[in-house]
Image (cartoon, rainbow, N blue to C red):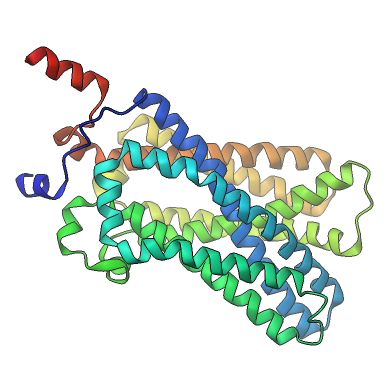
Length: 348
């Protein structure tokens, strides 16, 4: 532990400017809001590219129109995702200063490239969106622009995942050597990435289903492309969520044994959250399956409510996992809070 103490920098001498419990609630809530729109952006961009390619191959104008709808919605949600990302970034910087800044420095070049990559991706998305009709005779070029935007959006989450995983393993900082080395240096990187990407695709399918389902229930008449997008969304949401159950267990078994066992019975809260997340996911699959078989308002509302609960539970589990990993280090290197400042003053 003495060696680790030299790796973990002393906490900022200024006390955390709010109650730690309040900040922990805020980091969960702000992250949930942010990640939903990130999922929308990534999945809808992938959906646009995939549907456009399928439409070109099958010469299906309905698929091409569905792709155009997806690109339109992706360009909207990307801006919301960026704005909502400020909150959780600030929260993690305040609560986990010693760990987050260290992990950020270790992948400094990759972290600084995020801004450039996102600017390029967003410009490509705008080009992709606004040239849809103009480039009907240049479909290969148009698809290539969308594919580049999608590839960048698929890559950026890896940078964030490496950063948040790296901060959980201070004992491995000394042997880390930049971003690309870290991809295989730390455990659970690729399991987290798979879990995240599947969640994004499932969320995008769910978005199509909810958006056009709600539009129809408001009395609007859906176009053939919109109706097809709604049905397509249900199918994607259902099948990807089923696969996600398997990916979730792969992620669970990538944790340290002592952490994994907390979820497998040794900690009541973490075990309860895991069981609840599995039950809710199965319920969501059942609701989506029912909605895919018949246009049921009950299945629609049950899917929406279950989806919201799943996001909440997953956000809570993510925070508890981070706390479980960092607790031994926080015990040796406590945060600077108002209470510690008062205690030091009393000692003097």
